[in-house]
Length: 337
Image (cartoon, rainbow, N blue to C red):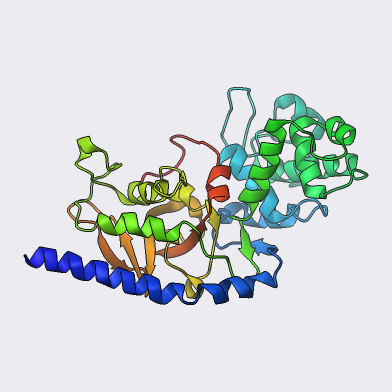
């Protein structure tokens, strides 16, 4: 009886938070409109601290490239892993094929060699190669960044032939994915539009209140409907047609990053012991307003409300369907929730 009353009060609590916080949503959208959707700089911790200076410097090498766009390419290619090797023998943090590296790799740090495995060479080489491609298609009408990305995927000749991004499904998908993913690395200018799917995600999460935590839990019948932190947020957004990655630090890149004073219900909120590196995120919850989140905390606890204002608060993501779809599939490369 007491437990039932408690759950009822919790549901009432979350409804009040959602209604109260969403009353300001229209104002947030209007405030962001003046920025025209542009974004400058890098979001806090989106790029690992040891690579941030390189990305900021070389991401301004030419007008077609920005630090956020360069970061999106590197994350998509390797997940910031300088030792990555693909089945096609693409190597290092920028995933250069040795033949391409031979013609386009540069000595980014000026130490006398060009090392495909060294981010100090590979990141500058990625930016330099992008700018070479941008120059090759500079006379083509349309968005220079999109044309550059299309040339990266399909070759400059195809972009010139079609007068822009060619009608290849793979190329159009690549351009959309990288330009969308770049938003998750950029520090937004103005307000970020509210998520259209947020209310449905919260509705699912609140129905799980009181369910015991399970490490690796996906809420399946054989797991008695139990979740871990990122399993809960993934399942919540699946109910509204958004497919998030399985682990918390990859979920961070599923949209733009509103600051703490602009959070809205439905935002994912993240926690880490390293506040300079999103790859070290270890926990995620679903924000419901008023400084609270619904989360699956740890073994021995139940899904519950917790405050988000703790020393390990990392930041937030406003999930979008396009943002989630832009994320690369990368099994086993991230920390478990």
